[in-house]
Length: 296
Image (cartoon, rainbow, N blue to C red; front, top):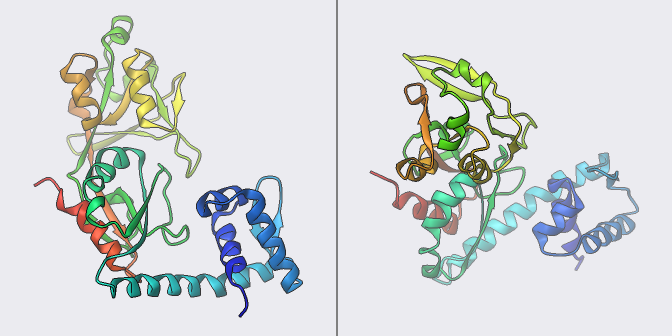
């Protein structure tokens, strides 16, 4: 029988767009996955990938092969998951992509006590602030704010609406006046969040009397992690725009000061979402675990 591991490796490389990312996903070395794909090209006597120092993309033949094998592998994996259920024990791997904040405050706290109940279910969690296409990147579940979920997905609310607040340390405000409106933020050192999905800084959004205002803030510090933004704000290095639950403990303790509260905007809360096709029993159990603890 023809071996198919090289086809599977090729499909992962195309999907990831990188040998490095593909190797990390498969748990092998970059050299090993590169050799696997080269062996496939020699076997077929076709060039399947265009390689540069920065990216990997399929040739015309490679794209045709990828589109052919991708769906077949997905069908096989889904069927294997179903067969696993016939043993009477839910089994399979569930890959989850969630924002860093959702991973830390919702996904992991809810799955941690749940995992011992289902020892045959493997869970992979990727904390990432990018807007991820879960189908293209072969994730089973995505967790994002409700307004960011694609319309063709099945979505389950797992958290209440999220209120965003502006905070700074007492030390910072000892050196700077408190802003009275979003427009005043142009005079402040604001800590930015860069979104990997489009390379730009996150715009701070405000709402008052049903009128929305966007503030394109600037400052000396930019991170791609809300935890680092919080740490910098606590150190007095600037103002931060954060989910209220991330700041409330520090506000209550006096380590941070809340400003522009009357301008705070609220977004639709976190939802777990998945594609309707091939929703395995293991996947649905994970969704239920995330939904069970939903605040009432």
